[in-house]
Image 1 (cartoon, rainbow, N blue to C red):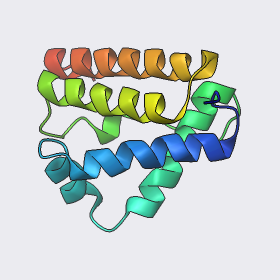
Image 2: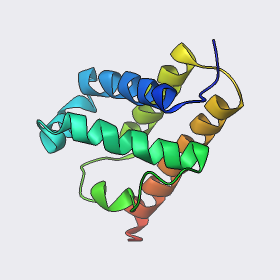
Image 3: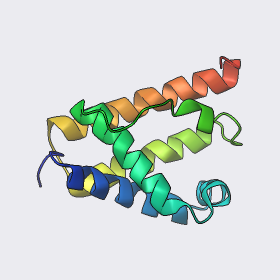
Image 4: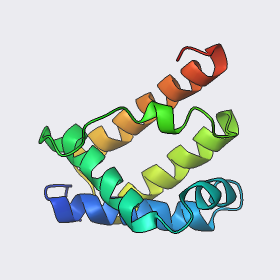
Length: 121
């Protein structure tokens, strides 16, 4: 296996992750009801986001948290999210950037949970 080094790698990571999220009995109904038929746009946005985060190439502008503020999610949803995220990376990649992506995702989940639980938004 190789590390995450290209935009195509990021797209594979994002597509693999959201394929699992969409099928998940806990997360799927939430994401599918919000995104509806906008999955291709969402996947592009998420690939732009991760390209910005992992490669420091500005492809995404904005803040991801406001889009999640109104979702009916709690700790169990974030735990499942992290499980699928890490599995999608472990299935396809290994290396420094892959490990960084998992670390950054876990920190984002912690920050989102904190903001949602404390109404810090």
